[in-house]
Image 1 (cartoon, rainbow over the protein chains, first blue to last red):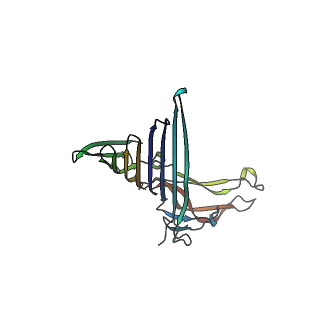
Image 2 (image 1 turned 135 degrees about the vertical axis):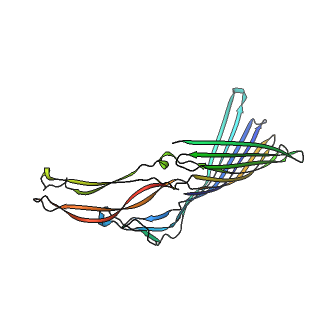
Image 3 (image 1 turned 30 degrees about the vertical axis):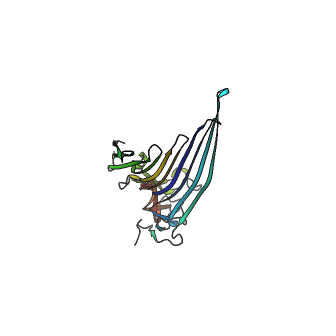
Length: 124
Length: 189
């Protein structure tokens, strides 16, 4: 299994502004990831439970299907202080701007080989 | 399961032009686990002070090893029960004559080719610090290879099915003999 990820993370903190007794913290991240197995993708949907219904197993090329994800999220935190009553109020808002999930397929129409039911080997 | 690790780190601080500090952190880790090969993972991080106390540029590179969990190192054997004949549900055969016969097949799921998963990560970024705010931005890229998963394997088995000659006659003959595939999962990279 292989996973390739890239991303950008940012973090902004505005220190307490005395005039409004409030501090701000904003962070965000963008991530893109792709994962796949270097194994063959196999097809075994036409086989039955009984012995004579066993079929050969179709094999698509290695790394035939790749899963991709992408996300962009941010969080804003506002912290306000009311000294008269010794209270701190914080407000946090998190947003998922993008959440994507998709598959990328190679040749998914015709199997390139098969595992023989006779000997479990891949004839080439 | 036994795992041994050793880690060494060194921090350098170099002054450039007598005012800009360059901080470098270097580390080296070694992991050794039974049944697996040893793995050496180096890392280096650097931070350059472009504007003293205010603006810094950083970069880093590191390789980390992810050791397999117990199930990948000592996977359970795969068991199969092939039913050669089963007369238990029969209504015509007398109860004391009904038979059941199965063949148990056991397969080792050990994969000695399992490689240690490793993650390769590089990053670059900057930091800004002032009296009013701090800002950190980092861009990174990582690549995990030989990640662990359980993948199917198919092993050939000859599956024989028997049949009783007739209700009155307690003799059995081979009805069918078919090649089948036993499907089970083994740890793979």
